[in-house]
Image 1 (cartoon, rainbow, N blue to C red):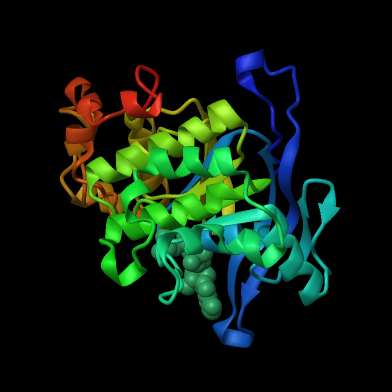
Image 2: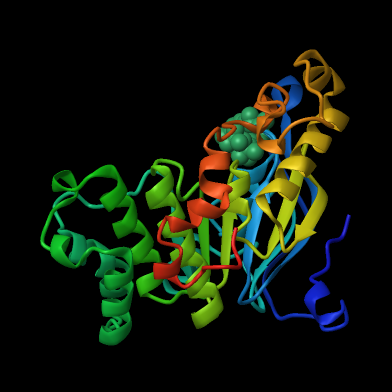
Length: 316
Ligand SMILES: Nc1ncnc2c1ncn2[C@@H]1O[C@H](COP(=O)(O)OP(=O)(O)OP(=O)(O)O)[C@@H](O)[C@H]1O
């Protein structure tokens, strides 16, 4: 299945620049009886300057897709491009350089170096690449993630949320061509998560940053411009301008179509009640169903400093 980057906001006519793409991407692990096809002929274009979320049940291939797109994992078949450059077939050294110079990462395990303080961790990728940080931008990033008074602290002296903010600041500071995040807000409480997502959103809107994020959380996905749905290693659906409700609804329908029993057995009554309370059971296949949905989604939930991050009104 081919997923073109048509932008419905421009009436579907204007094709957007592509930041990364996969063509007929196959990723298989193991061999013989233990062979697992994690990605099954995936075609996808990731639009430049847009925020893309990847969703799908546990084991559907989300992380594998992200790792392959980011050049962190080899592919079994197919081609990956970052911008115009094909990365499949690149030798390790070139791939490492490409990742270092052009890609930013935000993982749940923050991968901060314990011997460096927060500021040093934030600027480390640029230091390694021999690039001077743009001082003004660095200050903007640090101020926005609220780390000004923690810059001299080492990771062990920071809370989990602060460490994650360092990791996000590190990814953004170098202004990479594309940032990949694997559940970037997974370990944050809802307030810190909303702040982080607001900041990522702002970096897309105001700075043209390209972000790809794997998430299980409909609220997080609602910050994106586009949601891709994976099931069994294939892209089975997508949604532009998502809302948390619409994402949740789509997840429910996909869970029903891939495992009708799960939703039926849960006693779910999809027509009744608020979407967020329907069928946590039926959504288990999607991993961590976020029970805090309503808290963060309702009108008053916007008090969670969305304004401070310039996202008020439009998201999630
Ligand atoms: N290193 C590996 N060796 C063997 N199989 C693997 C490996 N990594 C992933 N897989 C398998 O590939 C499939 C896709 O895994 P992947 O981690 O991409 O799924 P996911 O959608 O990110 O799942 P989750 O939401 O649970 O993190 C799964 O069946 C998984 O068991």
